[in-house]
Each structure stands twice: as C-alpha cells, then as structure tokens.
Amino acid sequence: MTENPENIVIYGAMWCGDCIRAKQFLDAYQVPYQWVSIEDNPEAIEYVKTVNDGLRVIPTIVFADGSVLIEPSNAELAEKLGL
Image: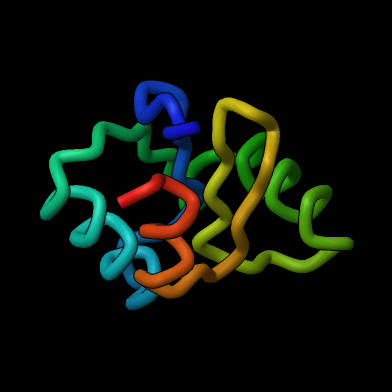
C-alpha cells in the first residue's frame, strides 16, 4: 500500500544537512509534505524530543499511518513511500 503523501510531516531545521537531503528527495519525486521547523517552534521541539526518547534528532518524519522515520536514508524513504 502506498503512503498518502498529503500527510507526511518533516520536523527539522534549515541548517540540518539530512533534513535538506530528505526534502530534496521528496521534491525530486514530487511527493508533497509539510515542513515544520523546530528552530522557532517550541511545540515542535517537544514533539521531536517525545518521539526520540528526549533527544532532538532530525529529521523526524511522521507518516499518515502514525509511523515515524528518524534520520532516514533515501532508500528508507523510497521503501516507505513505495517508490
């Protein structure tokens, strides 16, 4: 089953190389997503820390089915999205 791309949320920061890579990957495949910057969003920081056992690990990518990928490779993203 292919993931509904409308419900992908990337939590990250513009200084994060892995975040930029994940965004570029999704953009290259024209997969829509919502970007949430943790840089100016205390609620986003707390969510990321909750999902990552108290750590601020980004990118944290949340999918419609509730699954989460932490710092995924392009191959992991492709597999999750059925690409």
